[in-house]
Amino acid sequence: MDDQPIILFDGVCNLCNAAVQYVIKHDHKSVFKFATLQGNAGQLLLKKYDLSLNDFNSFVLITDQKAYTRSSAALQLSKKLNGFSKLFYGFIIVPPFIRNAVYDLVARKRYQWFGKKDACLIPTKELMSRFLN
Image (cartoon, rainbow, N blue to C red; front, side, top):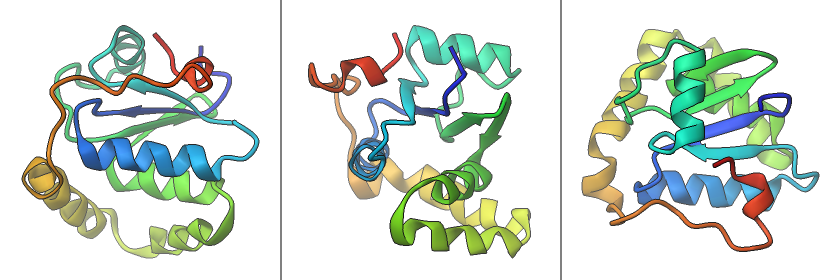
């Protein structure tokens, strides 16, 4: 299931859904797969990598048999995308306790600032193959 990079995200978070849409738009080779943290595939992957099964405040990037969380996941993702997004990887030099403090603030306020859906994202038929069940 994880031979391609996989992004686990909060399926009801508008900010998270916008980030997934951004990745889809900029992933011209369709490298990334996606799963919601709340879904069966997401829960299996969280368990496999010994991550919390009920903490939906972080998105997770699984690549090369390793799971990245929080700011490290975002920066590893930026490194793999095309275009100017690669420049964000430069923030890897910022100590993780600082990066994660900013990440955690946004994660705590994301529903307040960006809103929340009543249900997880349902991909279009064209994108269905990129989403794990």
